[in-house]
Every structure is written in structure tokens, then in C-alpha cells.
Length: 82
Length: 167
Image (cartoon, chains in turn green, yellow):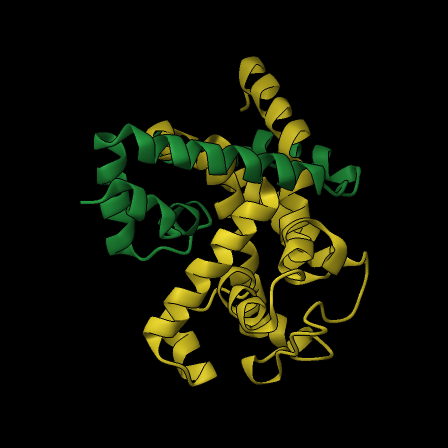
């Protein structure tokens, strides 16, 4: 398989943005383990996406922080595997 | 009960990421009240699912962003939410020029929405429907009356363009 073409196909972005279908996801995850270049491309895109998304942050209402903490503290904190 | 250490870890997560997650939720819902409810749910859900996060698959932020996006789309597409909105959004009336609906903060000028606005119209509508409204490629092909292969190619091309904007 041509790794360079695969990386240039938009699959990396599609995977990271959550738009790949199950089959594409499984293949991508498999290939990521085998090919460092694919993993590196994914990490590079994830980094720039995170940076951009954080630049576009909007402050949620201030009272929300306490509300979330209270929810979790009131026994609503059971993690699925506990 | 939250342990003290958990408390600190959660505080860190919240302080670090709530703004970016709130932003994406708001870009999808364009409703500050609904977005606040979703953000709250999202953090509880992130906390609960934390042990299923697998760093091999990607960054923590990517994982959280996708949880937030899905949660917002679930609300957007829920019947009660649709009925509660003054102007129902249906795929048929997606207007790519004004796809930000009514306004609270001007979500068209925030984050990914802003970037999508730079795409050409035939790309923009597909990212709007897939990323911001949660339609599958198959559904979009039917809605837009274009072949599935074309939907996929255009979405891929649009994403590549967005990646280049991010650089």
C-alpha cells in the first residue's frame, strides 16, 4: 500500500474529526500501529485541531463549574468500570 | 464521592477544556442554555468513561471533542428539542449562506464554524450536514441527491482544505 497516498487521502482528518465509518476506523487504527508516518500525521493534525479549537474557546456560564462538581460529588461519579 | 485527587484532576480537565468544548457545542446548537446543559452532561460522561479512553487511538482532546460533538448532535436531533425551536432546522432548508441559524454569540465567526465558512459552498454544505448535524454519508447522498462516492470525495477534500487552513 502506498502510505503517502493514504495519508494524503483525507482519511487522517476524517478519522480525527469522527467522520470515518467503522470499517475505515478499524483500518486506520490498524495501519497507525504499523506505520509511524500515519501516526505522525494523525498526531500533527490532532495538535493543530486542538490548538485551533482552544483558540476558539468560549467561556461557559461561571456557575456551571460548581454544578458539574456537585453532580459528580453526589454519587453521580460512578465510572463505568467501577 | 469524588476523592481529593480526582477533584483536582477533574478541576484541571474542566478549566482546561470546558471553553473549547462549550464552543463546539454552541456551534452545533446555537443556544446558550441548551449548550450549558449539554456541557454539563458531557463532563459527567467524560469522567465516567475516562477509563475507556485509549491514548493509542488519539489525544485526550480529540476524544473529548468527539464526545461533546456527539452529545450536542443527539440533542439537536432529538424530537423535543426540534419541537422547542422556533425555526426548525431540516436538511431541506439548510441555507449554506446563513447556516448559523439565528444568533446569540455569532457562532459563524467562532472556531471550526468560521473555518467552514471559508470553504466553497458545495463543500461547506457537506461539512455542515456531516460534522455539525451528524448525518451519515449515506443520508447526505439521499438528501443532496448526489452519489455516495461524490459525497465521500467532497468531504475528504473539504477536510484536507480545513487541515491546510489549520496550518
